[in-house]
Length: 347
Image 1 (cartoon, rainbow, N blue to C red):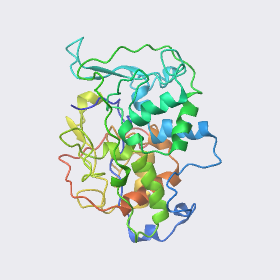
Image 2: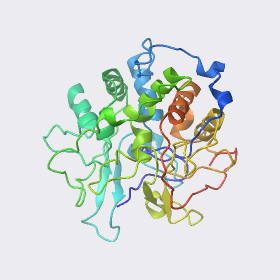
Image 3: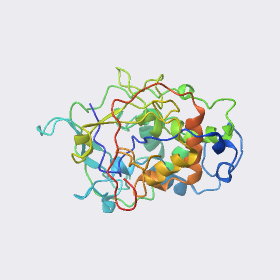
Image 4: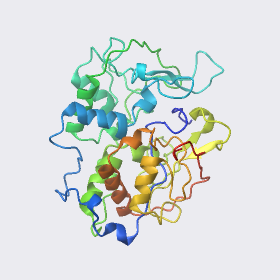
């Protein structure tokens, strides 16, 4: 079953698409890659002097692309910012022909009684880190808490601090319907030890370790760019190798897109992103175009109007170094997708 995310070029949080493999020149230490040699084991890329709510805003709005799932859309497909992060009724509809089956709504994250206003800090963290609801029920794993649970405690606290600043929006969402009713227990956290380590001999390993946290421990890139096992969990042997399937109709895309869209293999294999440079990655994420100047397809939230367009260049470069530093995986994607170009060069 595929997941409905949002619309053209602004989409989710399952996230990330065709990125990069660099050439030798990129690893000779240009200024963009030397922001701080730091401690190789300090993988949390957050600024310790940054206010928690400011860090949380960045994590929620950009790195996590939470609004792509939790903000309603206007008829134009643009996010309705008057209802930002207030949840989406029937965000996923497994069977639009039935009124009593198939709907899953994303949660209201604002400070309203219909949202998180009456929830404690720990209750909120338990939901997005563990999939545990205050009523004792489990969240459906469409919400990728099983990978978000590997983020740092400081970042989890920062997310809550930011959510506490959101104006309350009255948006009572209906109970989820089968097959999205609460499972008996949350999905197990993906083992952090299985997230690939940067190669020991990688030239800029400190940057790659920071990228590992952003792409793997925080989880959004890894979650969308990894195929599933028969049980529905991430395949630990295919991390970052793409192949996750999204249906055009579920994404609300026009017929110019293929019927099925697959997340890209973002490892440095011939079937992936071999031959890309660090700058190619930055362009892909910030502008939404690949190294051949073709637009990246949804659900990749890249480009100036997408959530990833707001990532810092430093974080994007760290992610790029990480992808360059992990073992390449042979996973040929069934069909590549190129998005129509929009005014301004984005997709």
